[in-house]
Length: 56
Image (cartoon, rainbow, N blue to C red; front, side, top):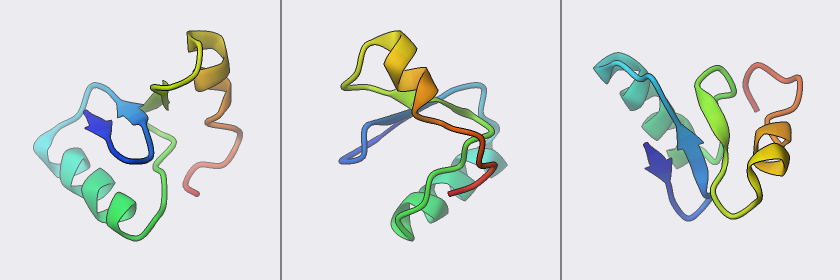
């Protein structure tokens, strides 16, 4: 799943987790557990953007 305009890419989602991510995006948050990085950076930098927080 790609969440725009933020550019976060998510993977391996169930229907429940996809809904959780959409709700978080609506609130301006990112869910780190399934986040694979940001789409507008190189792969290494995009993955590093997740940081240590479980949920921002």
